[in-house]
Figure 1 (tube, rainbow, N blue to C red):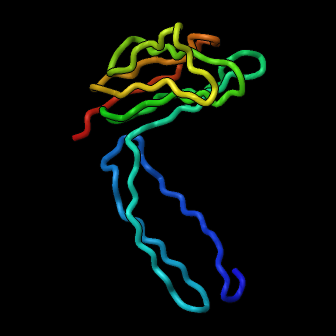
Figure 2: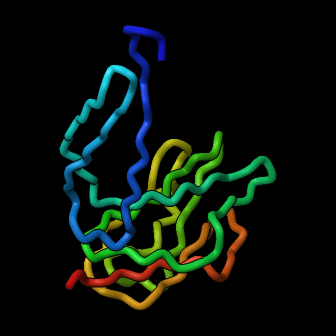
Figure 3: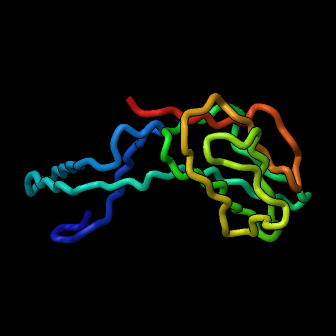
Length: 147
């Protein structure tokens, strides 16, 4: 940072998918030859989890790594279409925990998301792009009630 100047800094806050609270206080301390300065700020987190899915140039969905994502009941789950031009339809199997299979009559265009709210605890349920595909096994969501 230049003498008597300013600079931007970035902080990373890690938030667990099983939320145990959606607000906190962050304390950031900066140390320089001019001394120590502390900033305290409130942090509020939206109770939502976004899964980025794109339709690639070959017309197939591009998925995150396989595995089960554990979320809390009440979390808004969003499948965001990050692709440039093609829509998708999300298959959620079975229709549990407030996340029904997306209607093929209402596909998700690029820049939009298919959204549901996890309404109750559930064992892991599979999801994938029903259209355009490919259909994969190994992507799952589970919803858990908070203690």
